[in-house]
Length: 320
Image (cartoon, rainbow, N blue to C red; front, side, top):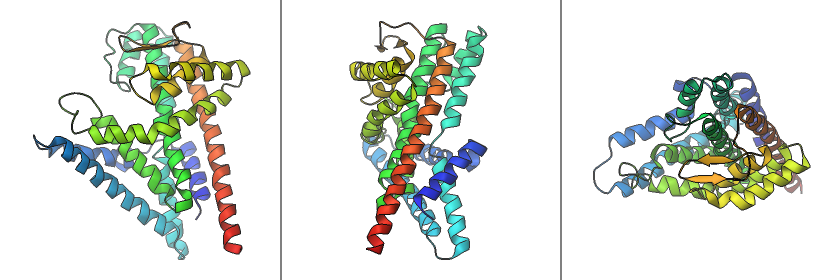
């Protein structure tokens, strides 16, 4: 079946089931591969070993994507149905709108009740910084930062590569390869003695692959603010604040979220975005979740339109 059908089915799966159990989740499979490779890592030539690890794991998931796509294109109806369902399941697992919103809600709910301790604990599961001494405002800021940054990693980028590689017949492969690289970056992409060398390629590839999606996220966030003033603030903040973060990409979506919400985002001793605005509250976490849902709907709509245009052009070329 077509890339359009697979995406529609993947969206239905996202609405109906959310995240599957860990043992059936492809991203968990990626994580297990990375853990096994880390356990076997040598003490020398760690950068070379990291390159080998990334190439090996992405090759495995490329092969999986190709096999599933071949099944979905089969002329045998039963195989085509199985392949299409498998492709939709794998694609659904590369993006995570509901789980991103759920993670934000787990921080917001205790924070709204004044239980900063529980909010810090929930936050520690989604950020790498030390959350033990954060006050209420900095917990809310970190939550909004995490949601805005992960909107690119877990929604925009997988869909971007699914769409742009569709004309080559590699739509599912594109989403899986991006997710594999992103998982390497989240596991090994730290500038420390343990991972600095081994995570070099994963971190660099993640920066490269997120370059365009991070910037494309800005107009999606602007439109999703449902207000001309918010759209202007989102664009202004993204343009003025994107270079404030250590990452070459995360500042774009974070700045746009900060501008749209009218808040200051601050990671102590690292960066401050929109310093003239107020610090966020638990209500702004709700606002960032709402923004993520609307921006995701906008992205899915644009993706479906582009895929339909690809299909029409392909049929026209075939008929012609």
